[in-house]
Length: 339
Image 1 (cartoon, rainbow, N blue to C red):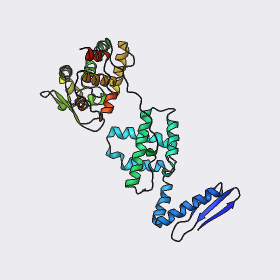
Image 2 (cartoon, rainbow, N blue to C red):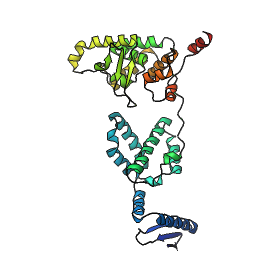
Image 3 (spheres, rainbow, N blue to C red):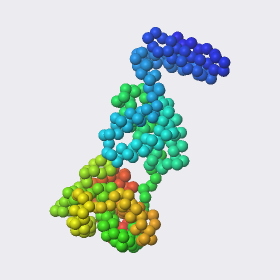
Image 4 (cartoon, helix red, strand yellow):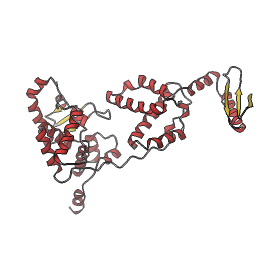
């Protein structure tokens, strides 16, 4: 039976049952104390002593403790680039909420956390945090024996993603950009051409190796992509010509630099810095390198290539995500209607 006693300004509850750990807590009102006592006695009646002990241990398991274990047991199975990204998100999560017990993060608490994040973070970043939390709770329930945990991510509304960027090359921007790149480094111009012609991501382009370029088939093979799925990318005549120029440059360069089978000399950071300088030199504003992937994807659709084929080329996991990358020009729409 529960013992409920008034101690000064609060009410103290203590529950003793043979074979079970003693439970105790304090409350501001007798009504709260009585309700808690009834709930705990019901739980004791339904669970074994071992289960009750485990539940009490789970209540002391902090978010920091859980993520420390997650980093050791779960992250090593992911790609190195994904590991680094996830570790960064986990550090930021634990910086503010690491001392909070997993059992204390319910829907209401998480909703408050989301509102706080929305003051400084984008919807994409918040959804990434929520994905990490959700996976953590599922692992804890399924693999760590914390079966009573409720995944709070399933109880809250996720922030809506913003409309996809619609920045495309306009007017003579492509010519100006390529001229600026050519003046800086012809290799940079060919990287940009390949991006516009293939819709490959920057990391996919710079990670390309010659052994994955199949000249007879006019394709290149990407074994390691952002979403973890290998794919084959067709090469247009213009993209193939850019690669041929780079191959000619690399005949002597490869022996001199010891770069092995890499197609391009640029690193990701070096590429980003050079592209930014070329943009400034060309007098173009607001066109990121990733926007070239949007441009290429939109051009594929304007050529009336079937959506599923475009999705296979670009590597988008869903047609919904593909649509966010696709922005048909007004001229193409008019031509489609007026012939």
